[in-house]
Length: 303
Image 1 (cartoon, rainbow, N blue to C red):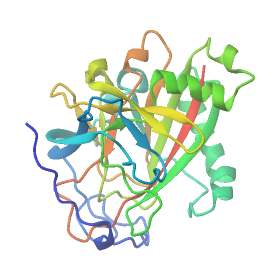
Image 2 (image 1 turned 180 degrees about the horizontal axis):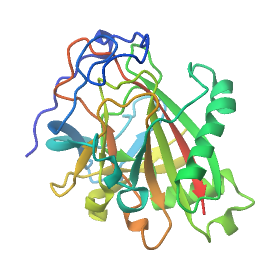
Image 3 (image 1 turned 60 degrees about the vertical axis):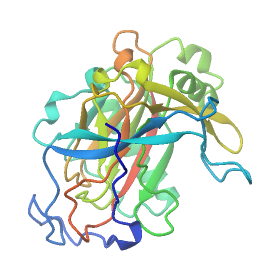
Image 4 (image 1 turned 180 degrees about the vertical axis):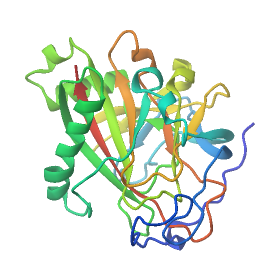
């Protein structure tokens, strides 16, 4: 059943102070507020086709004058979302297109300097992927996005179900970033994996929901032209289907990592090689909860 969108707490009303320490209880944050947990039902935004039947598109940056940023709409549906906390071992990249890792240290704390992110955090992520993705023998990190629930933030949490890549755009990524080696690399296994983590955990507002890829039909996915200033790519929007199973990892801490597989060329497990995901408004988010800040690193993984 399609329902009206919930009314989230406006970003400017959310507290954005950094946690003073990690000594708080597992069930409250540094403000003493309860961390939302458990199986819940929440509204998620799914794809609605353009009214005129045209191919859907989305401008990544400012669109041309007089042109809408995107030409497709959204449908809000109430969806059960189960908590991964306590059942983390049930899910793997090969079977479900997402996986979780705990207690991952990092030498980067500020995430305000592009130079430090690339010199300190990038090598950590590369090492993490090589150690935890079966068969991986080479990793190329090609970009990152920081999202903050604060006024004037360059990027805010995306409250729309989507997948960052499609099969055609994944191959185009290999050709774009490694043009001299692309022909050979495309003959072997290649994957695109996002590494997602909070910067001011535990996550209280706008947690990330993921769909078990094994429950998502290809017919649910719609390619959307992703328009950059200098080129076009493609992402996927997602139609609502009641057979989809949704999850979130409650109270994600700064030491937690969520691996999201956007594409997998493997002929056997590749059919589960894409994970729909979205930020959402948790119905039990306490008033005054800290606004979520996060970073996602996108990687080409070969082997």
